[in-house]
Length: 283
Image 1 (tube, rainbow, N blue to C red):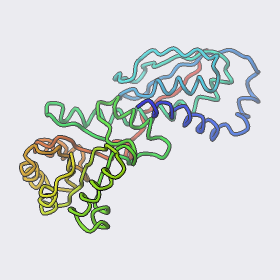
Image 2 (cartoon, helix red, strand yellow; image 1 turned 45 degrees about the vertical axis):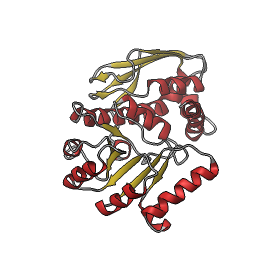
Image 3 (cartoon, rainbow, N blue to C red; image 1 turned 180 degrees about the vertical axis):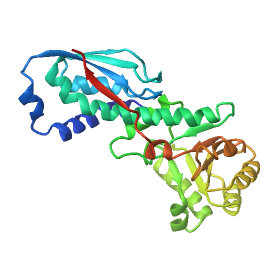
Image 4 (cartoon, rainbow, N blue to C red; image 1 turned 90 degrees about the vertical axis):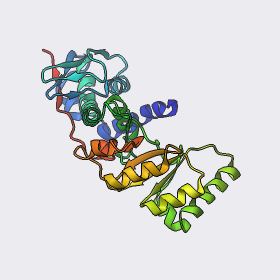
């Protein structure tokens, strides 16, 4: 986790460079240098607040002399009219940071809000809701952070921290057994200790996987609820189980009731409406 947080500063630096270029010429033209001021983040829609730490990092990179005061912590349920933070100092710096801060906060809060809603649908059941790698390029650190703030859990961060044998891997390898055996050979020859998850498309592939072994979690891809129930019974707690593929708020609870351990939902990060908020000058 530490290397991901360290990466956040680097990604913010790139985002600032993308937005400012050779200068915020509107602000430079309109606002005299050194003019002090204060602004407040105003929430305009009900949802879960996420990204306060990121907002502070943006302001700090733009101008270390800005004073950032958090009024509400991440994870707070906010309502129209709530104020999340105040920032004071050079008006030029506040205006230059404004849009980037809002971009992070609005998207992260939208993700946290949607995650919180889905988690609430299965909160009484022993299942964990996972995100996926279906994230915005160069926004994964922040989007996965928002999922956690909303009450969900992170699946693998990238291609490097877990082995997930998906359908194309199986097909190119020549089948379930070959893919699993080659994976075990790779781990042994490289000395790597990585969790192995296998995606299966039907009960026949699951049977082949159970015969072969060499993994810790099995993912059921686009199974119906009835197929999922049968598959969970076949695994019989020998491995962790995960449901994936087209699961939404209308079907989530039915899948959770099959006894599966995890449900991954790509829509947590790739089909999200940003939460409405704005930065208002305090005059």
